[in-house]
Amino acid sequence: MYVSDDSAKSSPFRLARGVSPWLLPTATTAAATALLTRRDRRWALAAVPLSALTGAMLWFFRDPDRTLGEGRILSPADGVVQSVDPWPDGRTRVAIFMSPLNVHVNRAPLAGNVTSVQHVAGGFLPAFNKDSDQNERVVWHFATTLGDVEMVQIAGAVARRIVPYLTAGAKVAQGERIGLIRFGSRVDVYLPEGISSAVSVGEKTVAGVTRIDHG
Image (cartoon, rainbow, N blue to C red):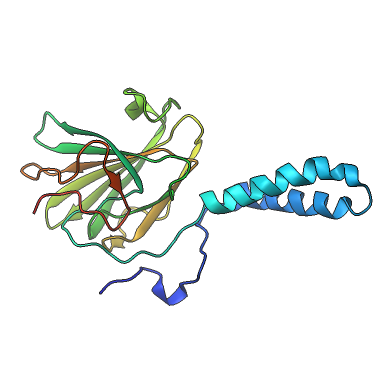
């Protein structure tokens, strides 16, 4: 059984790719102020909150290995199903909201070839807002055995950067890590016409594990 696209490099605690610009400055400053407290305890006023922030970021940017679930289309994100909507073209959109407590590494919902990775500029409304689909986002298209499958990573009120790990032309395995939304917030998957959702609003999902299509 498939275990992880990086199983050969598995470790007890993995950090997501693309976190260095956020984590390193915070961790370095926390370490420096902690050392300065040895000379003057007043530095603890800075060292304590910075150390706490570093710990929170380590937790936020965790990237655990996963055992692949069973199903034609798997959830690309950890989170809660925000909506399941029929689309005018016959597809069904499944929107998954990610809270700050969720893992924010996204995974391929099914195997195929990446045909398009398009960044679209937009706003930064909270992800639970009904108009957040106009936010800053990255639109993915995969050529699969089910036809074209679209997935959209959407930034939220805090997120200001989506980090794709792949480019157009890449071959991808189901459940493979494909990108990160820093402090990010929502992922939409469009089920092809004729395929219904196996999840409902309020249901929790696990990236690369939860089946979201009815077989």
